[in-house]
Image 1 (tube, rainbow, N blue to C red):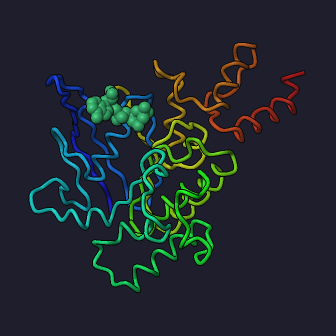
Image 2 (cartoon, rainbow, N blue to C red):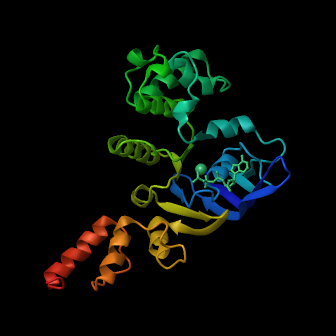
Image 3 (cartoon, rainbow, N blue to C red):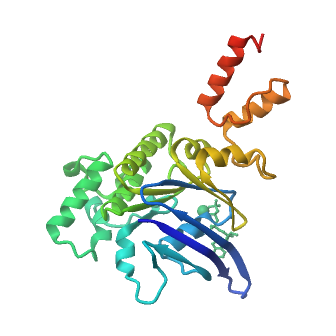
Length: 286
Ligand SMILES: Nc1ncnc2c1ncn2[C@@H]1O[C@H](COP(=O)(O)OP(=O)(O)OP(=O)(O)O)[C@@H](O)[C@H]1O
Ligand SMILES: [Mg+2]
């Protein structure tokens, strides 16, 4: 299933009538099974784009096609859209509300048309996928859980609908390094089992390491897109390049100022390590 975004624009209209153009003529496509990152400075339109993709906002102009069908066309089945796309906004743990974890996770399946047994099976699967023991957690109040556990319950609530496309807005913000690592490992597994993943993040290292393609937004415009490595390779040449460089790229810049010129193609720590090893064996650093 592919998503095609065609000349997509969105403006928020404020009470005063003033319009804020959040997205301006964005066009791109996302292939089935891909792991796509969306990056860009604060206010550039990332969350707005996710909301449009999830069908929570309607474009001011332009189109989003899912499987060739315009999701904003009259008569488009919104219910099937909700079952195809699962979206997790920032700090989803604040959206838990039911009296038990089980009820919270089952909420999104209310209108799925599944029978009770199927709903129970999905809820159990989702909670176990998120590392919980079902019998232990099912009757607990979500409010009595730790922050990290709440977030895992919130993710289970999205997983329970078994969406083919999973979208995350800043999913690793506020997690400790262990939580971050295990979450990224988890979405990689989901992706490897066929789920298309779209992840908005300010975490450049995570985007660089985990995504296969990147969309770069700036002031509502798509300023670059392509294979992750290629996009990072181009960041250095752009006017706004300082934003969106990996730590390894920043170190290369610092070293070049200190008169050690390394390849501009270095993007990751692994690249940097091999380049430094080469320099050492050549005696370049002696
Ligand atoms: N509900 C709203 N009403 C008016 N303007 C809004 C609203 N939501 C967002 N905006 C504006 O639209 C633009 C894009 O916002 P958006 O939230 O999509 O950015 P973002 O890239 O997700 O930022 P961040 O990295 O801070 O989450 C910003 O200028 C923002 O101020
Ligand atoms: Mg945002």
